[in-house]
Image: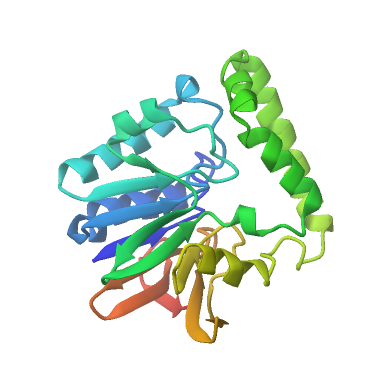
Length: 248
């Protein structure tokens, strides 16, 4: 089986989420063939050269899982797109392109963070194109640390205030784009995060049944999607006890 998670937004200020994640790594993830983390793993990441003791402890926990035999794949999100190869080497994980197609139960499945599907949020898409431009990435990675800290705080503050003001459909995926992207990649299953709206959405692509699964964000609960011989099963669990609460 494999496990897929997204939008943990790990930070020292949320020790409950950190404990739940470390418990997952030391427990159920050890039985998995692979763990896929589909973006926004950390609340903020300003560069591998600025790794904190807290972030290094997370890297060490990932390395322990990797050394146990579980493959780990990490996709960039909109909060941690500056994670680089140095962190991945330390954590024993591989960077995964967004989007990527993998095989689950002998079927192609498209994995994305999900923010690129939110095209109705015009201002965010403009910012995303600028931030993900190779030249912009080069400039950002070479700014002084103090400047990167200030920029990260500014972007986080603006993102929170603007999200509260935007209509809910603006910050969700563009519905008509989903089947188009899935058809382009030749898949009938799409798994993504970003929107913090865990659910399974049946749809049709060229008259054929398809499925979009939105991963849950770790906040009130933790969320995992398990793929095994029985199919795809997403569960919410209590951060403290680990008890399963809901399924999406």
